Length: 375
Ligand code: GTP
Image (cartoon, rainbow, N blue to C red; front, side, top):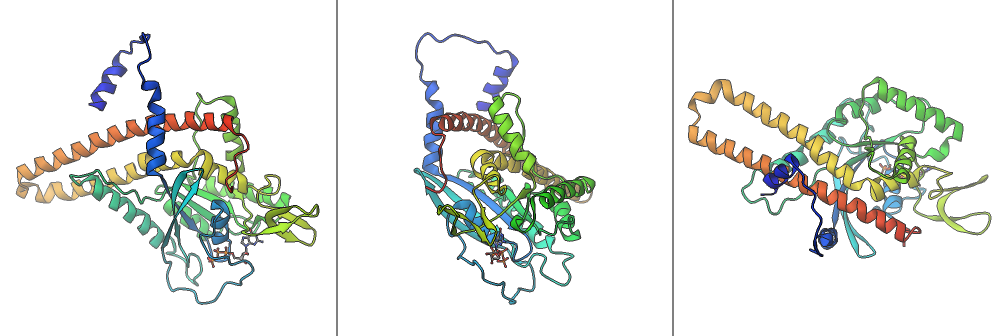
């Protein structure tokens, strides 16, 4: 229905004036109310060597103690033998809007004498999540789809000030077509402003040299100039230089702020002049969360899915083809076709929802400029 309707609409659009209030101007509210009721769901993976401040950053980002406070605790030496994958979910609520947040942690990454295959368990995990989704899509009853796909991967780069390590390059090279990579410079308070500037440039050069595709926030020409400028500012900060802290310290003027205290002063987490934390949070939570999910679904997952189906087809055709029951084959094709149609329909719906959400958030932003995540 929806698909053919839209197709017909695309062939020849006739604009007509309405003769009275019909009511579909209320559609955005309906979609909004439904999303609010259902809640939002976002899965973020964090990867980086131990001690780079991963758990601290997650706590800082979501303004909650998802991980027990570990400030000034030295890392223990009971390291596991392989990279483990640990998943942690929490429901957080802000002004009546629920967000179910899943953090996928990867302890052990880069911590071994031989880190050659550190990326492997992580890639396997991401693909297993794709497989689980694919399996649901192929089910007859697709009403209760659970989306456990990883929507973004924050990759922690050690603040060496030099360039990317072979470990970093290998990880990103292996993963960049499977997940939205967001590189960050960990503990950037250990570098000077100049060092950060140069380090960022070297990281970007390395990324380019190795043909690594990091997450690129899309630009839309129909966005208003303010949004375009805002997006540019975010993109220009990548790789974000991060400082995390889940406690408050006192500034010289007596004000308490989230930050880290040094003999020469205080580095404030939430001060954009001190680090890029605010920009990272803005992208991840306030402006690009839906976009990250959409790109995961429409591009990363879609590529994975077609490659997988193709490889299955190739295996089948030359050898087993003759023995395949033609009825079963037809049924299989019918199911694939149905999945495809359903997908198209979902995509159209999600584009619509995306547009509505954008409009909504614009409205909201103009309504209350002083919106604070922590309150
Ligand atoms: P593992 O759990 O071992 O993988 O470590 P992690 O990467 O989760 O690091 P964690 O958040 O436990 O932080 C390790 C230590 O670094 C703690 O003592 C933190 O207080 C400290 N730390 C965290 N973030 C920062 C930061 O931005 N700058 C500085 N200087 N120290 C930080």
